[in-house]
Length: 357
Image (cartoon, rainbow, N blue to C red; front, side, top):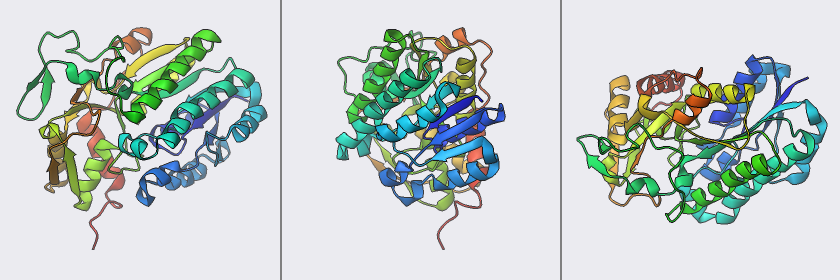
């Protein structure tokens, strides 16, 4: 028996990973206690995804309602499967800048402590299993905001000819910049994943994601940019913009393209690997451009509200480079771009995200 353990298994990337690896014939064990509902409220609950996974996958999926801070419960799961564990995909996290400020203890305990708990269990029970960690571009803090940017009609853009013109690379420093409390906890987790790879010769990878997106997102204001844009447009909600004239740029990568990258690493793992993973130049948008795309798809005009102050540590322009990953895994290819992503989110939720009567 070959087992894949996925934390945050009911979330966007976690649920996509569950389905992806189950489709390869692997038994998948999910760990998710729906803390997203605690973080962001009932509309952000992932309970619906658990129902879908268990009904669609049957015996191929086993769900555990366990908190990754619970060392005893995690140890019991890892002891049960032991060396049968062929891969660990760690997506569980507290994902919000704003929420972390309100409760930094929980943020750090989940993001840093929970990651350490997972790493130590892999070391003790299945050290040969590759460990994939969903890190974030927020480990670079607000360093990207020091890049030379040019204002265009609908977006900010980096100066032509800059070394990062085709995307920010992993050589960007994470030091001497503002990270936000959330960014700091994710730095701690990211560095620990690298350390276990080097110190204990484990096969580990940090995937520093840009905007991860897809139709399985339980979209809410504080997390889930493109899905929340579509939700606001479809439900006729007001979308609140924070700073940068709404021209801030994000690269967006579909959960399918993320999990295909995970599979590539699983099949040929490395030790202490670090990769930026996002939409890159293939798939990126400003906030204003995303609004226009939503309006094109639905025919509804966006309802927006602008606030001059940007969120602390927020990136004004982020397009990451996938070059390092593609050099190591040349067969990996992106499928989705922003229009495809928004269209799929619309089609998946057209009967659910409707205006209140």
